[in-house]
Length: 448
Image 1 (cartoon, rainbow, N blue to C red):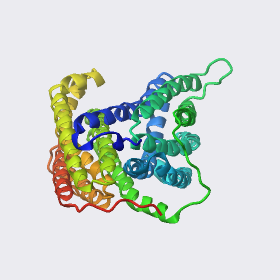
Image 2 (image 1 turned 30 degrees about the vertical axis):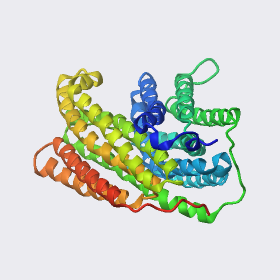
Image 3 (image 1 turned 90 degrees about the vertical axis):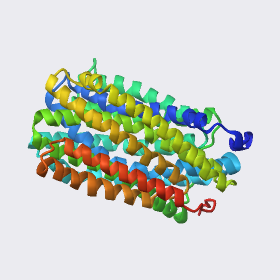
Image 4 (image 1 turned 180 degrees about the vertical axis):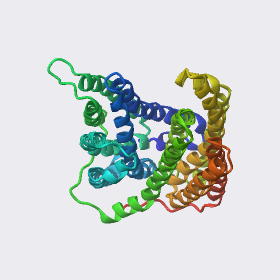
């Protein structure tokens, strides 16, 4: 019996279901995000130069990886639709084609990383540091297939309402990552100290072990994983057509903050440090609406099978619940901004500026959360291009261009960028909500 056949959906508690689906995804994503924190803490005790190497290497890696991996976010609502319609038997082809897509994307990502010199050169590193970053990225390449194939496991588990598998495996991965990185970086008995390369090797080992553990859990729970030697061109094109804009959305979002970070560097060390703290708080905060959006896409996807009219109402319910959570979080973030800033630094001047910027982050987060959650619901309807166009226009047109003017010509300082980002988020969330309100419901998804 499938999930949606086992209950009366009309009487389902959507907010409760949303929380049950979202919180394990959030915890799992938080665990993965902690990989970079572990790297910085450990190499900080080994070499100050390695901190910079990890920073540049991770920046280059995630700039490339995030855009391509986000394409696979189209899969959770598709899994939900097909699983609700016919159980495990109905998701076999989607799983097989998902694995093929992950392999194709892995090849592309690995090729770009092997030729990432132009991106590394942006940081103007000396020859030795350039070589170390290149070596660091070369090691990370080994883990790319595991990371992308695991995204299929992530989508599958989310789509069949088993998000705790994601949380469990990612926490195991965090523990493995921490132990192995410590051993590889600092050395242990016969293991030589590898320095910054130990961080990359720790990530690679953790990625492959997490994938193996996840597959074992699937087999233990008798969740079938289908493999096919035949690639369906029609299905691949459909997944790329609908998933591609999602990847572009993440790339636009990530690159915007990267560019702002580079521009803010011209305003002095205090301003740059304060902005980095605010940006880090913003990124961690973003994981909340990202998880809610992913959970919403699955829930709405389950309703699309036979009750399309009800699906839109469920979407509104998910959005309202998510917005309430975002409002409460933003309010707490604003009220605790000074305490949060002091957690990052003991420098009083940096702390004062950072607390001011975190107040801006709280406002930005609320409206960005609305956009993110609505976009998650829209993924259920295979509506991905327009939300990407909206965000790209607002972030680059208003956030970057407007922010640059306010910061450097308007003499607002770093506050100018954050003020422009808030305006961009307000407009993007408003237009995306209107777009969702006016969409026509699609037919049930059919695979090629």
